Amino acid sequence: MAQPYSTRRRTGRYVTLLILVALLFGGWSGFWYYAAGKIETTIEGWRAREAKSGRVYACGSQTVGGYPFRFELNCDDASAVFSQPPVELKSRGILVAAQVYQPTLLISEFHGPLTVATPGQPPDIVVNWKLAQSSLSGTPAAPERVSLAVDLPAVDRMSGGSQVALLRAKHLELHGRIAEGSVRDHPVVEAVLRLNGATAPELHQAMANPLDADIDAVLRGLTDFAPKPWTERFREIQAAGGGIEITQARVQQGDTIAVGNGTLSLNANGRLEGQLRVTVVGLEPFLAAIGAQQMVQQSPSMDKLAGVLDRLAPGLGGVARQQVGANISAGINLLGEQTTLEGKRAVTLPLRFDDGAISLGPIPIGKAPALF
Image 1 (tube, helix red, strand yellow):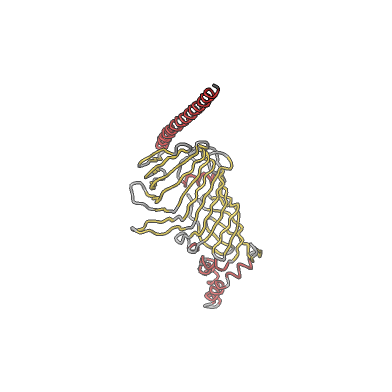
Image 2: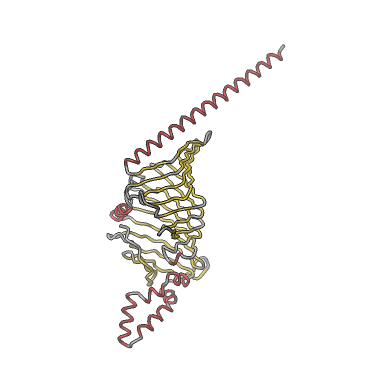
């Protein structure tokens, strides 16, 4: 007689367990769909607030998925229009995901191409890639840490219906975090840039061949992250006595390796001032890549010296130009501090920025544009 009772008892336990599982499943499903609805409501409220500030974000179509353990926002035909400065961005779409148990970590994947244009005009810049992902800790309104990783980025400028290559790379990474302050109150930003196999011949002739770069920097002087033109932001940095501290930088191109650090600031004209201490292995190919010989031969100081020599003996100035140009590398090595870097002979020189004019030791290598 005990067996039927035992069977009924076990059956009751199974039924109870099934009911509990069903309640748990139903409760979790209700929570997920309620939270998904709140996400869409929050996004719409955020878009409305952004639009009042001159930043309009839109999706051709938008869906929320990821059930049961993720929230995924899929925005197809994404676009953003900013009033200051006037610019319009468009891409094929963005997928943003967060785990239910970690809603303040947002992982995004971007679908190219991305176009940059003046609103209502054809694109000025076209950006494409193989894979582009980002992560954001915090919230979009108050980010704490942001990372971007891109495989095979390609940036082109549109010119007369054709595309001119501005940047090519095997891989690009950009990381940033707020080290001090907050988004709204004088943030100090630590940033890291990683480039692998990058070329940018339109930027400078020295970047026609692939290079690798690792640069760590700290940006000080920001008032906040409120939307404003970069010219205004740079003025704030200059007024606050801020600038960029390059804590560590390493660049390699072929046999040339350069490492350095230092601090740069902005003067009242919006131009860079300051100095980096740079140690270089393989200086000769670098000087050839930047056309240092021609720059020295055509510099104002060389013109002045050649004029003096020509007055002493006609033609002597031209001889001096050729000799100085031919022996520029040896001269720099004598002027610099001899050392070693990564087990190789190297020379340490100052990389100076004087009202935007850039010089490596005594060699002028270019001029940085005014930032405001």
